[in-house]
Length: 236
Image (cartoon, rainbow, N blue to C red):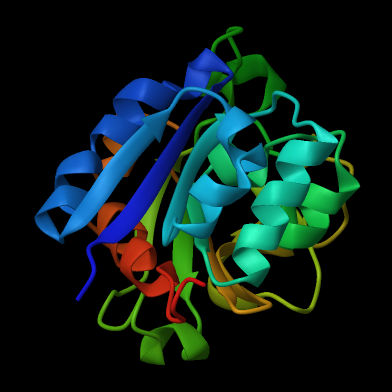
């Protein structure tokens, strides 16, 4: 069997520590038999030959920009069978100006509600809320999340805009609070998969900081997601 090839693409907003965050998962990929290539920009997406030989893309690029050629290359690779995965803003808050990227991924960060205004002090912790990630009925049977129980976090709780083509493995619910303008609880997907052509996409929204990525359930989901998303059809 040919060795599987993983491409780790990182960059964008430094607040999500893309280098340190991706380094956490390189040993897992190598231990599972992947040849790993690391790129510090999305330029590689426009390299058709490189993408055609890639079985899995792990992206950690928050915000930033992507060119039409780069996005076309990424999309074509996924359609042809390359897996695509990531966590938090590195995949769900990438390339805000690109509607085609949103279409590919199927869900996009909208906000992370904050604490009561009187409890805010101007730091990232203003948006750290206790919340629960709940595994769906589908998630309890899916290889990525089977055996994982609902779990609690105190970190950013992503409010995600999404479409019906995502298969939701876990959700999180944003409650109503007096200082917020919405009038009923809103449930967002927290972990989802998406089939796109011959490719598989996995998005895990928890992962703002290294301690969250080290949470046993979060890390397990991300690692299983890498394996599940990996190419299942032969590269041409």
